[in-house]
Length: 446
Image (cartoon, rainbow, N blue to C red):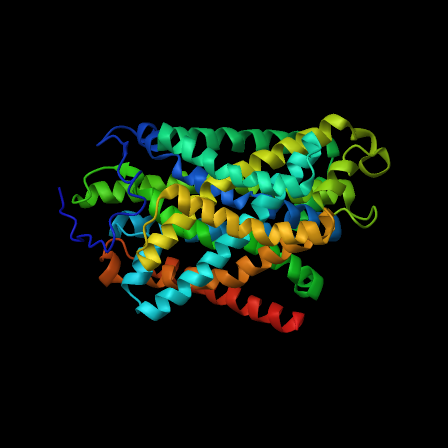
């Protein structure tokens, strides 16, 4: 047994103390037993890659530009796998989540600025979840969007109830909802009969992506795919497994199986995002404008003129059910992330119900204002959602750069667990590349 050299110094207790080291894992055993025991956190991370914000950018990207942006979905997913590997490794090896580590290695003032930016990014994520949930309630039950927005506040109490059941049960519920979403979209894409050759060619990057409209949508996809709050979330919930943290071999095993879990779940998220874009392209590309909102897509799925012979009320109802499941899934992870960054950056602990209620209430306010201003029209909410996803892409370097720096540091991670040269170079290329694209987007917009 090799003694692990790092000793944890908490400023405010362990990350998400209520779930930290609560899930037992085998001390040895075969590959599959270990994989099953460590599986779960990856699913909670993956739902952030298939939330309503992904829907509006991926389906909208397909409807507007055909299969062109599939390469963006693919590259974004690879970047996501790289970053989530770093995030889980940071949490497992150091015992600190990304927010705690950032606060520890930065000054108080810089830590405060980074906290504000991260909180705004979480609010941007929550805005997409609120809008998606409210629209799904409207489509399924006829509840007015303004009232649906208000009702989404109750989501936080659902999470509090689930927390009482235990973290393992939350993971099982999330995996079930992911499965429901994937099955629905496999079915819908299968009957839409996409052109397979065009789909395959879409994974090859084209220079047209750098045009203004395509770039804005591409960065929206990046922002909706590689999400800042997921880096904080994964660095925390990866610590939910219980093993001997003084044993270097046990830590290495935890990193290994956490990576397997994350990559499997993110592959599923990639498949779902690909299905979303293919659905938008195969059913709606070149068939008229105005198909970028959830309601218009819901209606189009039962319109023979737009969706062809496959159109049916069942198809559109399944779409709305998947949208509601997606919003509920994302609510679970978004509120947990809010707690992580508040406790990690500013060392402020408040009751979990109050933290989650505050986060959701702050996110609901701009959505309610937009819903009332546009008289319940989805068009205004759709623009708000797309802009929120672009903001996530702009805020991403604030999380990426510290993550790549920390996990590449031998002083912080130790010689065995620091990023090797290839991983470090890829991490820095991703951080710098996304930052430059964001600068280009901002200059183009102004």
